[in-house]
Amino acid sequence: MSSLMIILNVFVILGLVVSAILAVHFEKLLSAVIALSVTGIFAAAAFLLMHAPDVAISEAAVGAALSPLIFIVALKKIRGGDDK
Image (cartoon, rainbow, N blue to C red; front, side, top):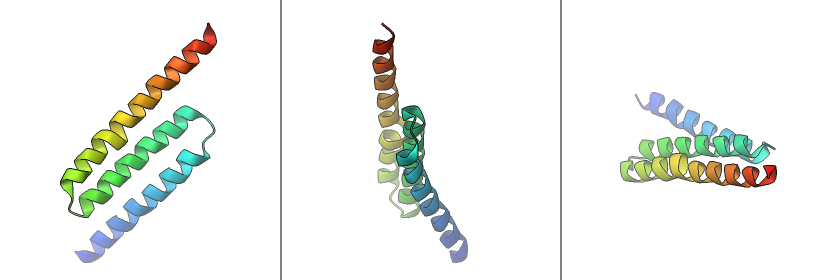
């Protein structure tokens, strides 16, 4: 059972690192925001594996949902101003 937890922890940490690197690497802002959202999901999973469900719920709500939504709305408003 502990080997399964180790494999799951490694998967979550690798996903966290890869998605964070992709968020920095992407040139298109929308792709970077989506990668940042995936980073928030992996961070929430990491907190859940560390037995911190309250922090995981907060991270999922803010890091994976609210912040990317604010970034996407801001990008739409900025790009909408370029068209006029």
